[in-house]
Image (cartoon, rainbow over all chains, first blue to last red; front, side, top):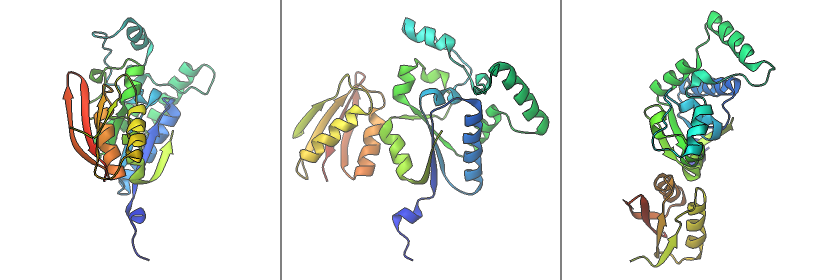
Length: 164
Length: 74
């Protein structure tokens, strides 16, 4: 069978919308598995998915009052993300994180850092950065920025897109 | 000087790209459209749009927080 442009596309795109810890960890498992198998991976982080890109800083200078309030209430790093589906989600998160550590599961910051080292591309949705009042200084290094066209271009260059 | 001008100032993603797409559909091949946008996602988005659609991004520059792009229909 002749190789068509469709067959040559092997990249994977992950559109990360949620910051629910279980979904985010699964997204990174998919990404790292894909990278290990030799595929290129692009994360397009939008809405709450942007919280995965945060570097732990809260920047208030230069923001409107509304953005400052949103900043104060938002997670500042992947460490702040929780499992949201259970009751007493903060306690449950604590228990599961302890269990993950005991069993040798990588933490989310470790997953993010490994993904960056392995060449996973991270793109932050610019419109959502503005909507949530997130400054570029609050994001980790190496993040690219774009809108829907950049997201769809990545998806067009992939043979699988995940919406998480 | 472009053949058509689009003022997308005040419009957020994806509206600037939608406006470009609508205008390009009406244009003849070889004509150019100038787009002005203050959306910070615009530069990367218009580059991606041109790469995927096959139209040529003749020029893009930023003047006082406003992007001005010229696209030629191919």
